[in-house]
Image (cartoon, rainbow, N blue to C red; front, side, top):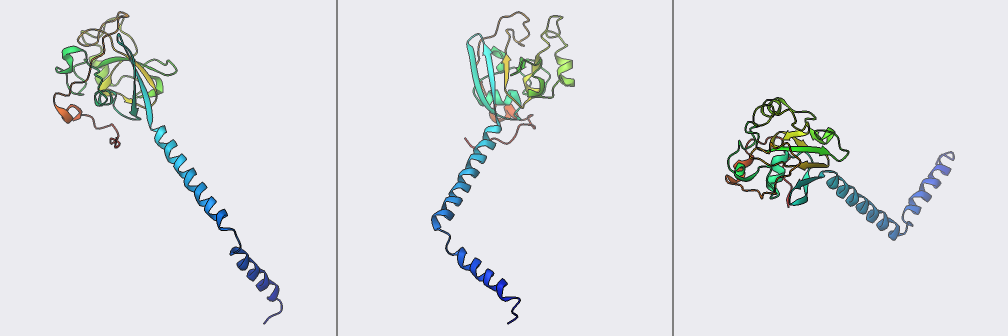
Length: 202
C-alpha cells in the first residue's frame, strides 16, 4: 500500500467509526426539533392567510375571520352576515356589480381611505365608478370609502360600515342594523365570484 495514502485511510476509518458513536438521543432530538420547526412554520403560513373583517352596524361590532383574497360579499355571506340590507338580501345582482345594494364603507387597519392596500383593487373599478355615481348613490356627500362588497378582495384586516337604506346609500352617521345572510339560491349566490381562493376544510 502506498505510504502516502496511509494517513488518509486512517482518518477516513476514524471518521467512519466515530459516526456510529453519536448518541441516538442526539439524532432523535434533531428530528423532533425539525418536525416542531416545520409544524410552527406551517401554522404560521396558515395564520398569514387569515384576515379579520370588523363589521360595524347599529347592533355593534362583529369580527369575521376570512381567507386572504376572498371577495368581501362572498366572505360575509359564507359566515352568516349579509352585506345587503333588508329585502335587498333577496333582490340583488348576486355579485354582478350592477345593483349597488352591497355598498359598504371600508377602512383598513391604518385608516386609509377605501381600504388602502388592504383590498384589491385599491380604488373603485369601472363597475363601482358607474354604479356608485348613479342614483340613489352618487350624492355630493357620499363617503369616498364607499365600495361594492362584490367587487373587492380582502387582503388585510379591514373595518366595514353598513349604512341604512335599501342600497346602503344613507350618508348620515346612522348605521344599519345587522342582517343575517339568506342564501336563497344556495351556492349560486357565489356563481359570479371567480376570484376568491378555494375554500379550506372547516
